[in-house]
Length: 186
Ligand code: APR
Image (tube, rainbow, N blue to C red; front, side, top):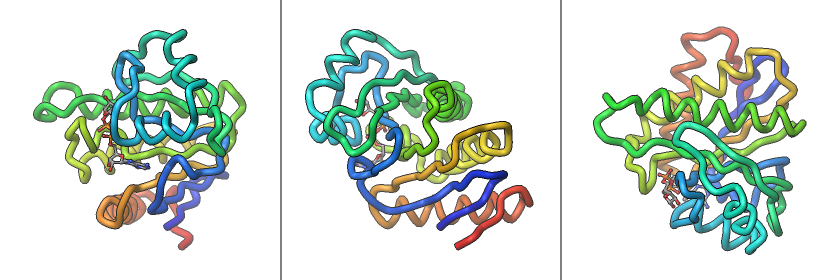
């Protein structure tokens, strides 16, 4: 599914983020940038040790923000490591922190002149954020960003498995129904 927002495209696909040929893929990282399972494990395995070496030099990244490294051997030139919140009950600032992880990633991409960026569904694996709620926050944050003055041309959400994809499709449809700046194109 695709939507046009301003001059940019927001796209949803089902797939593996490590295979994306874009300027940057986003990692669902932890504050210590130590690596882990899920997307994080897959990115470090596919990209090789250069990525971890840079993460060690950077050190830490607070929840709700992001840092950038090389893409190592990945098809993507860069990895943006974003740290989403651990879900507690939704009353501990989780939506704002999740929005912050997406917004910081987009700002970093902008600062580095990157035009195409792929996101996973941050926080919805090990960190336990309910995916329907996370999808609404993620899509609204990205859509609002793309309405502004940006050189980012493409934001692709790469959803792991059919059920995650379906949740994002539903959320994007609902968002587009209420916001005429979001034009579904396919
Ligand atoms: N491509 C795209 N999405 C993937 C991939 C992949 N190769 N592998 C897993 N996913 C999906 C998961 O299905 C989930 O919906 O990414 C989403 C995020 O899950 P996690 O990777 O567990 O990330 P998160 O919930 O943010 O937890 C972060 O987990 O791996 C550790 O170091 C990481 O401590 C950090 C924590």
